[in-house]
Image 1: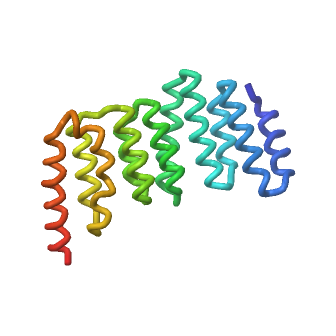
Image 2 (image 1 turned 120 degrees about the vertical axis):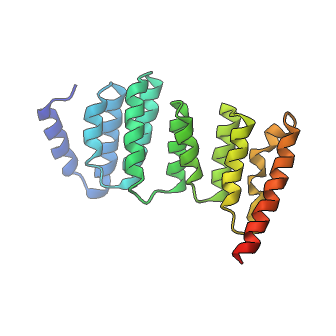
Image 3 (image 1 turned 60 degrees about the vertical axis):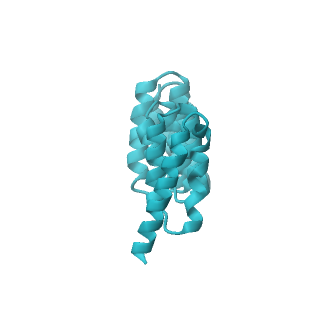
Length: 196
């Protein structure tokens, strides 16, 4: 385990590097510490990563490593901390996709779906939601709820059917789902008329 002296020496060495290399060096140190199980020390190192993208990716990688090492409690702690920190940042859709995936791997499906629904790019949001639905097989009611939630946010008719791939795997088993989707499509169109 790292000692205070090792920590101070590590920071001094990292600070002697060129500025653009510092974040990568800190990322590598944090990942190495995570691999040997010293997650708390790794988290301290991540606080010194100035590049937000690298910092978030470090946290996400730490969640994956702690999950692989079967340290699920610590993985959840890092995940919750990451979600809290990410909510304060201007994050990319790629980061949100990876974070949703990390949450799902830890069995935090409600959070995974919530994070996925915050992805701004429609195609990427549909892709991660479809992956979550197919992998974790939620009830048809939950799938319909996700589709409804997405459809209620649609502002243009052309975007309305982007979310159909979410339901396709369920249509053979639950034909009534297709009818429910068509009913929701009428509702969305009515809302769009009222907004104009």
